Image (cartoon, rainbow, N blue to C red; front, side, top):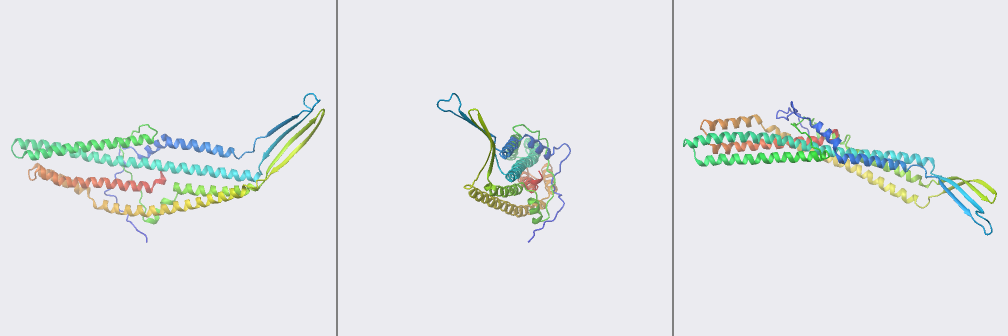
Length: 392
C-alpha cells in the first residue's frame, strides 16, 4: 500500500539561503578538493589500475647462453645460445584487457561511494551548524531579555515593589543562559573543527549558513526510485558483479596453452648451426580450481548487489515514514504564535500584571517549544540530505 504525503507550502518553512549567507554546496566543493582520504583513494586507484594493466603484457624475452668445455680443447669447445619469447593466446589478452577496464570501473565506483559518504557527513555537519546558529540566536535574545528584566527587577526591588526572591530568580536565569550560550558556541567550534579535519586539516570559512529547500518525493515508491537511481553503493556492487563475470571468462580461457617461440644457435668448434624454437605449456592442473573460485566470487557479488538493493528499499520505507511524521509535527508548530505569546508575556511583566517568576515559568515553556521546533527542523533537513545524497 502506498503512503502518500501532501506537498504543502513550507510556511514554517525552512529558511532559504539569504543575502550574505554562504552556500553549503561551496563548502562541500572545497572539502572534496582538500579531503586527504579522497586524495589517497585517487592515487591508490591510479596505481592499482597501472599495475593491473601492466600484468596484461607479454613476459620479457629470455636469453640463455651455455658454454661447453672438452678435455684437451682450449677455451670453449662448443656453445648454445637460446633467445625465446613466451606469450599467451591473443584472445586471453583481450579478455584480460576487458577485465582490467572493469576493475578500473570498480575502483572508480568505490571512490564515488566514499566521496558521497564523506560529502554527506560534511553536509550533515553544516546542517547542525545551522541549527546551532539558530539556538545561539535564540539564547542571545533570551539573554538580552534577562538583562533587561534584571534592570527592571532591581529598580522595583529598590522601590520595595518586589522581593529578593524574584531578583535571585532573574540572576539565576541570566547565569544559566550565559552558560548555555557558551556551550552552544563551544559545540559550534567543535563542528567547525570536524569540517576542517574533513578538509585535510585546513580551516574553512563557514560564514553564515542556511538551510536550502529540497524536493520531497510524493510517496515511498518515488523515494525508493530516487535512492536506487544512481546510488553509489548499488553502482559499486553492479560494477563488481560485471568484473566478476569477466573474471570467470578469463579463468575459463586458462586452459589455452602458453606459446613459446625463439631463436637457437649451436656452435661446435668452427661449425655453427641456427634454428628456431617453438613450444607450448599446458596449465592443466590449476584451471579448474581457478574457474570454481571465480564462479564463487561472482555468486558473492550477485548476493551483495541484491542485498544493496533490498537495504535501499527498506531504508526508503523507513525514511519516508519518519519524514511524514516529522512533516506533520512541523505543520503543527506556529512560530508566529509562539513569538506573539512571548511578547504578550513580556508586556504583562512591564505593566505589572505578572511577576518575573511567573513570566519565567510561562516563557520557559514557549522557549522549549521553540527549541524543539529548531531541533525537529534540523532532523527533517538531515533526512532530506540522506534522500538526495546521490546528487552530492
